[in-house]
Picture 1 (cartoon, rainbow, N blue to C red):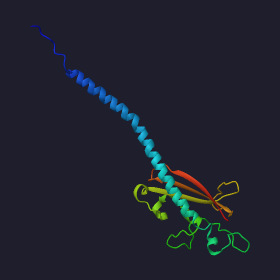
Picture 2: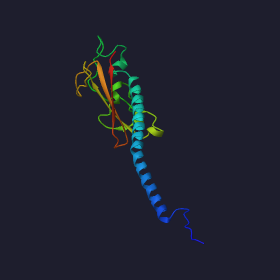
Picture 3: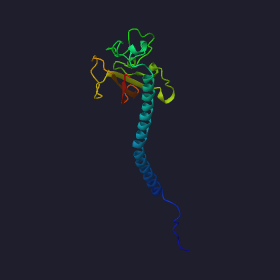
Picture 4: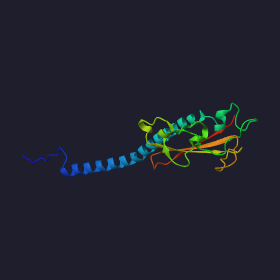
Length: 178
């Protein structure tokens, strides 16, 4: 009887090598997927920031152009009507932080929670902050410095960020007095 070698199965060394190789392959594959998941998360955050900016701008555009417009049917600066206010931002006579005209939404450079604007911030929108800047604009659609003489156009810049350290997404819009 001759001694036949049993060639069935794997040796211990072959098993260890296969497990090590599988580990390296999984590590390489997961390192390829990690940047894509970050890009996917960034796209979702950008989409939600865009939705928040749209909600906020819709809310702002539903208000009068200027506080003078609230008291008169005619637009501010028209014949027989007071000129537009030179001071942008919340007015001294605004009670309970009621924003009754377009420029009352100016946050004076501070990022505040979107709930402070009266927006529902439940679910995926709860950590978003907004910085709103309202300035008069010239005929070339350029924002004028704070304190400039009133013009019939305002530029609003809305910067939406997720959390205190989030990168802000900036949206610009214009509103004319007509």
